[in-house]
Image 1 (cartoon, rainbow, N blue to C red):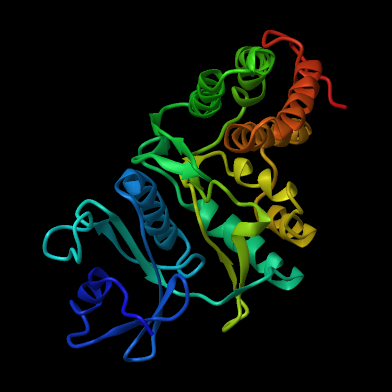
Image 2: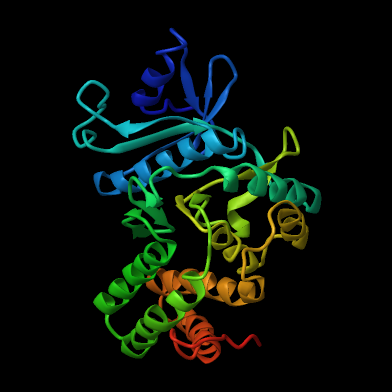
Length: 312
């Protein structure tokens, strides 16, 4: 087996003098004590992405210990740990390793309870947003702090609109996005009375699983920020979907926000973010799904000044 980069050994030797490592798979390492770790190295341009994931995991460990892999260290290679020219400035990431299987119905129930009672009970003292940029897939979320959820979510959608305008070819789609930002976001989000809680940020089924060693649910690859808890539920109904037992159990512990009759429209709005993000990352195939969401939202929320909202 080939030896991993020396930066990882140097990290572990702080607390385990004399420990050695071998590569045990494309991204996993095994120590001389038998412990396995998840490790990766990036290019200098990926530094913010690595930091965003690391800070997300640190926050999640504080909120819900063991629900996500525990971060061990994340940083940038310097002259003391470089192995070759070009290493300095490369980001590294080291966490515990979990052998993850497909999320079962039973584990989905446990995940729903832990999200509702732990992760989504962890509140921010600074408002809505996050202290570093995070990445939903490959898309940078600049974050920052906002007093109001309406302002925070509008900034997230606005960031995607800016990226689509920069790519070109999405002028009709961007016109709809502008209408959603002007009419729909204030109408649906201004009435909410909520506190900013910690979100995973990209909680689709592919970022969930079960720890094969314990049977406990696991979530990973976060893009965290503090926001409305319901925003974390939307993408789980997309792309194959998280088992329905997750949602039933979740809302047994954390009811839908008031006004409850607008829950479905809020889910459409929060799903729109992910359809737009997939359009940014993968192209026009997802633009049709985004357009359908916006058609419904603009139809059901005709004006931000309207006194009532039609519920289909």
